[in-house]
Length: 344
Image: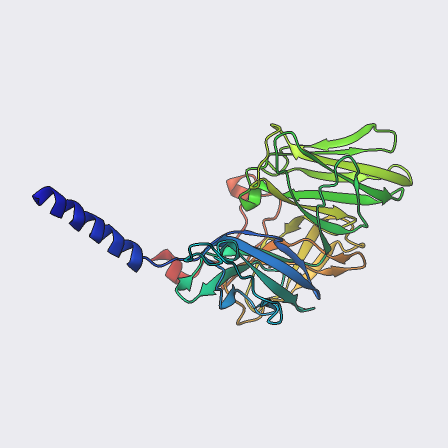
């Protein structure tokens, strides 16, 4: 009797726990993570318990809005009949995804945003979305046929299975300095990319693997007018739904170095630049405002070839000095002034 009561109590307690538990929303994937400025795109947010989403919250700077696409109210509901009754249509599939429309304004900053699904019982974990100045396309996964690209372009893709290789084709012009930049490892993807450029005869012209961590990077000087092929795979021939990447490809204004790396509030500074496709820009006069936020920022500038890649620049409120040669010995030391309070 006591045993039976104990079992009944345990089962009742467990059942009460199940009833009181709330289906917390969880996001696991976005159908696309990159969005071009000035475009409107459809997005599918996948996860668990997101079917009754009330809204999608965007964290970060303004310029990006996400609106849920509601089911067509005119669409007839599916009805079922069962021989003994008690069976109805469930919404298990609907609870795993939500469709939305993403609007990116023309002047939206290129900083990343975080998206969260808001339901009646809570707010999901965030997933990152990125704004790009390039035309953004999705890898189509066309088996055996290279996907044609018009440069410059950003491609979002996934090496979804072991041994998979994504192939793209583009037309190059002699003398072009093309940048091929894979963002995967740096964004948390397990992909260890291997990137190859071939000519129309299938001859390998360039290869990159561990250029930026496990990410590939190439500066490809086009030898002659014609079509070229890009092959992208995992170096270890691994693959899964988590092996995501973003490939930037084109004559992109690429900043390789910027010096000096910082400046003082309210003081102009000339930053020397080195890189590719910068349109003859060898230096950039920057003027941090007296009220500019302190710390590191990413700076881009407009060129005849489009918006440059970012370089890091530190804004401080201390005096700035440039090292000057010769200063290799103590008798040649550069002279600097130190604020008295710094000696305390």
